[in-house]
Length: 520
Image 1: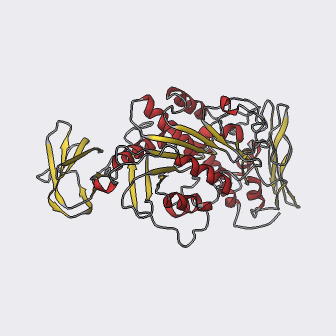
Image 2 (image 1 turned 45 degrees about the vertical axis):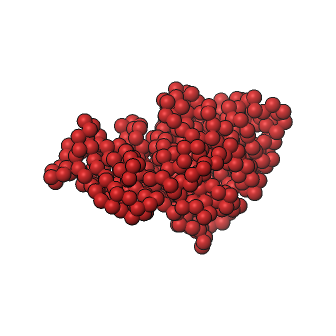
Image 3 (image 1 turned 90 degrees about the horizontal axis):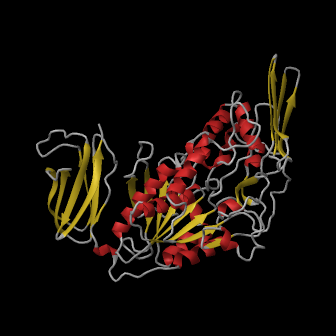
């Protein structure tokens, strides 16, 4: 046990979809460009948004062979381009790809805790934009870590089912929870019980209630506690949407990388074993908050809590049966218990009896058709018959969830290389019209474009009837980036009605058109 920090907030990373944000190292490059993305497809009446950070291959001036990397579950939406690049570049992964001629496009969701489907549609929009920037013979690789792997899976499957073109050759899933993610149910009830005593515990509990967490967790706490482990109803709704889209894309090569052991290694403790010990007593105060891993089928207590401060006692005991041993199963792990141990509690010491638990089971990351969490992956000579993936990779021992190692970095690079096509024209020979930002918008939006050479440029806005609303630019412009703000007025300065509008860029003999939505 060690003490650190200022309260329970340090356990904030127990639900993170990627490892703890690294210290930003000197020398991390700034992106060459940032693409602001607003989904054209709504989910639940909302349009998701995000930013895509573009890192061009060495010596290139425009996108040529893009690799789109999709962000995972960012608990407090704190990761920016430098943290994302720094983590993904572990083992010099990104720099190796860029040296080989690949461009890196990192998608950072505005809210990475929102519905998986909502953020998936942001990726759909980004794929379409990226395809418009590269030569038609070029293809794209899409990779997603943790929740990002689910977003990539649904986005591509949705595009295929709905006749939306994608030129994605490789879909790489990196320790993604295809069969669900796991936070010990006992720890969830620990947060629920102590949320009235600790603002930080209440904050963490609220994060467990964010849509993406509710969709991904195989067991989610309930109020009042249930007699078994059950997912939140949002999970069934998400899985139904996945099924309606065909479950997995069919056109790209599908690859799964797991951080969990393929050799049936557990997390160092047995199903039902105690994982947190927290007990304190003095004359006026008694506090108890003990946690056990979920059992393997049998009935057992997973949380025992008691608070008495002066004269008002509160208690809660949670027992479950019929659960599967998710906490101890082989899989990419999270240090939830170690984080709790490192926290300076208001009373006494929180002791982690074991440091980490299974977060993404190996069988979940590989989407294996089995109910056995301890399935002998390495011992199955025909493992690909049990998964929709065309290739799977896994280590012998369990690793930190979404961690990049020398071994899996090489697997990743080898897969990105597969199926690369060469275009005869450099991407800088094309005119690029970017999606306006924000979109939908009110009261104003920014329209930007890139010119490969000087040209006479005309940028106009039209309504859905094809009638000219306003001419924003009409004149000669030099090579490079052009940008202008439209304040939703017509050519006479009058405010226009809400609705769908189109903006058309003419540069020489090249014409580009995109859609935007004005809200009121």
